[in-house]
Amino acid sequence: MSDTTNDLDIRGREPRLAPWLAQPMRANRPIYLRVALAALFINLFALTTSLFTMTVYDRVLPNNATESLIALSIGMGFVIIFDIVLKLLRGYFTDFAGARVDRSIGSSVFGRLLSLRLENRKGSTGALTGLMRELETLRDFFASATIASIVDVPFALITLALIFVIGGPVVLVPICIIPLVILSGWLLQPVLDRLSAKAMKDGLGKQSVLVETIGGLETVKASGAAPMLERRWDAALQDHASVSMRQRLVSNLAVTLAQAGQMMSYIGVVIVGVSRIETGDLSMGGLLACSILAGRAVAPLTQLTQLLSRMAATRTAYAQIDRMMQAESEDNDERRLDPGAMRGELELRDVSFTYPGGAKALDGVSFRIEPGEKVAIIGRVGSGKSTIARLLLGLYAAEEGAVLVDGTEVRQFEPHALRARIGSAMQETVLFSGTVRDNITLSRPGIDDDEMLRAARLSGTHEFMAAIPNGYERLLADRGEGLSGGQRQSIAMARALAGSPPVLLLDEPTSAMDTQGEAQLLDRLEAEIADKTMVVITHRTPFLRLVDRVIVVDRGKIIADGKRDAVIARLRGPAAAQDGNITTAALQAGGKS
Ligand SMILES: Nc1ncnc2c1ncn2[C@@H]1O[C@H](COP(=O)(O)OP(=O)(O)OP(=O)(O)O)[C@@H](O)[C@H]1O
Image 1 (cartoon, rainbow, N blue to C red):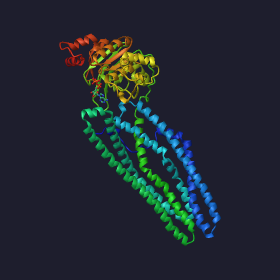
Image 2: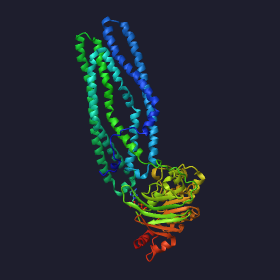
Image 3: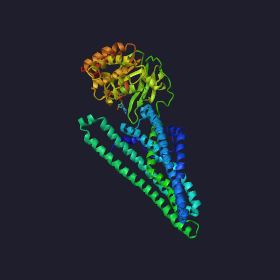
Image 4: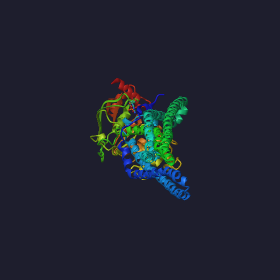
């Protein structure tokens, strides 16, 4: 299947722990110390079972010492109670630390997602969503018994020491078997890593199809895309199911081998121990204790092997998320300037730009827009108009040349501060889940109810509010479902106007509006934009009445730039476009120049 997750470049291993994960873990050190302390006692208590058995066989049974048995049993009762308490505490501490790590990495990863430079965004929306879901794999690892069983591993040494004390050379049996168990796990680890990377990639592939289908369900149904998506989904399911099965097989093999090791250790100790009993070097109880302990010495490794596949999945998730965390972000460079009271001068100086993996979208574009100037950018589909808007907002970085706002390279500004002063309504209207009010204010500081209402009146949103149940408190589903295209566009326009930013950057702001609605909006905008810089990208002739200057873009280059009437006259020439669409005329002019 054609797979946009490919460019996520999923690999298994990552050698070191990055600060975004290492720091929250370090912050939990005191809690992990408590986990280790609880583990110490739990492991020590576990040894008492074998000592109890030994004492009963060697001392109680031969002497018929019932009173000693009662005393020992009471002691064991206490051990069991402490063991329960400590295990509960250990579980609580690991969960607590896990929740803290989860909160901390969750918020730093989401923050990074928001500040990720758009050119570094890799993979489809679905794949990125899936990637974020992998945070749970990380959280599960740190909040589960995993950590606890890792802590148990060093206690195998204490167990071995005790076997040595009781059974002398019998200890050689588990000492020989432990490396075999480690070796089998170690050999299977790369296979598990590979499978887990593939499983994650296929999982993200599934997620991509799912997100795309759900996001566009109406179009999927209306356009008859269902069979195509069904085929993609089936292929993704099949890929994922087959790799998951192989993954389970290999981890099962690892666990079975480790369990076999545990059994071999137990039986081996009995066999070797019998010969020691014959020579009188070991008691019956000692043999029993040693065999129990031998099983225990290998047990933590069995637990570890059970975690192998989980660790592989965790490492893959970690490596993937870390790749996103390492990608260049908007906060990385020295963009700390605040545009202050922006004058609204915009300039592109010999700018060229190519989208990652795309063709050249802008080629040596230069223009300067003075503060307060109103400019329309027109041109045919795909000519690079929206790209200019994206560069002015600092969403992408120019590959060559400079993009300047008030004479300063746009990327030196703090992105949020810059975008707070450029009211933008991009071509694709995106509303968020929440109320209409939330969608206009976006919780931005300084935009209170009065300002929200003012913007809504200007954009025309207020006019249809009366017809909407609950008005501004109406809860919208994600992407603004439940509103018409024109209504959504009007809300997006109110969003751009709210806060009265000194620069307005509007990309096809009236494309979904009717002619009357558009005319009324233009009337209201006239006074609003009087002292503002406005750049409007449009295919619509009526909008031109608000501008003084027109820039015509074609195939990434500026082919005309000048006073509105002069450019229009040149564009119209003998073949004036009569359809209210200036692009037809612009094209003809473009062809001529
Ligand atoms: N995110 C992207 N990744 C890769 N290529 C892109 C991306 N966005 C746009 N392009 C390409 O860049 C070129 C310019 O696109 P742009 O969106 O600036 O055109 P436009 O003039 O705004 O077109 P329209 O009038 O259709 O909105 C097009 O050829 C387009 O295919």
